Image 1: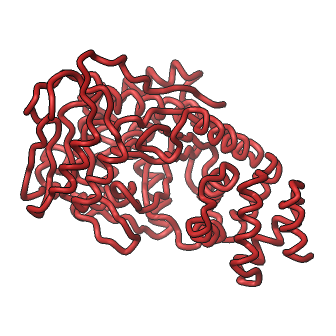
Image 2: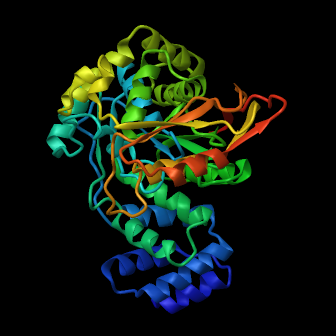
Image 3: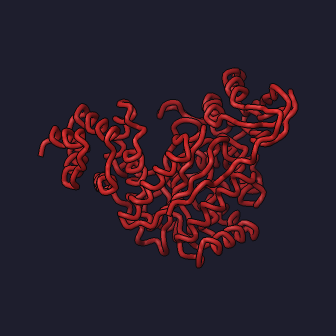
Length: 433
């Protein structure tokens, strides 16, 4: 088999066979296929797409390029959750303890962030003492004891995907549904979960900008999961404004605790409840979704979800006192209010610009090697639909340096203020099963 023939077939719009896909992935991972040939194939896929069968085979080949995590020693149906990301997206920190409190084991591997703020493990590292690296035995023991553990991803999990993504990033082939879907799902399948809930976001602060694109990606990923024997469901959720009111690592830990107390912002709480209910439903702890949602709300109201979060933090070496004393989390030295430019109602917030502002403060990474400042971030005082008076604070920047001019400019430009109140934003647009 020759790589040039595979490229020619895909360039001509033909479907590749399982054997051809495995040849490509094995050869590229081993270094036998050069970057220039893989780049040509990626561009052919970008323009001609792939069939559902091709995408499933590509995903499985990337899974088989590295380690598979064996979770068979963990009792129960292991349900994983993945978000396509956004500004203020702290859903994993909330839903993990909720579904664990219901008896669904959460054995989650998460990555670090690149962009607006840290990833889930970066946020957890804002907790003093928290360890995101556990041996396999300690990981399994933590889940069996507390029903939850969240650790950093294995270095050899789907290495083909890591290598291919780096190439996509420099060849303008990132925005390809087959390549995005197989990249995400290869890591989820390799992580060993029995079922998967996907939170596919769209809007100004998300990778997918339209609901239609988000639905296409969601349907593709759900098909992959089902084709590979994993019960999979996807929610299409809004990211036209930041989720919740806090952006930044320690900030988002604090807000997650508020939601687990039953006191969180409505948009964040409702999306978290929906994701958790679908996880509980797939985990088999309720007869149907309605019963699962009632159970989720019950463990929040009864305090079991918050207590599970406390045990989870302590179980991985973190200081559980942060639950009752959030001031023990990292604190920024400076707090700068950003005033509204006009009076009226907030009609739109460019979530991406708010996210960039948070990154400029140090809450995220522009490059993989950048260090994160866990204390910095942004608190939003006004969201879409809220009334505002000229000069009133629309948000507060939490910083550890005085030069925050560019962050202020970006946040100010991100807000749109109109004379009339806008329609209430829709939070969940669709569920793909």
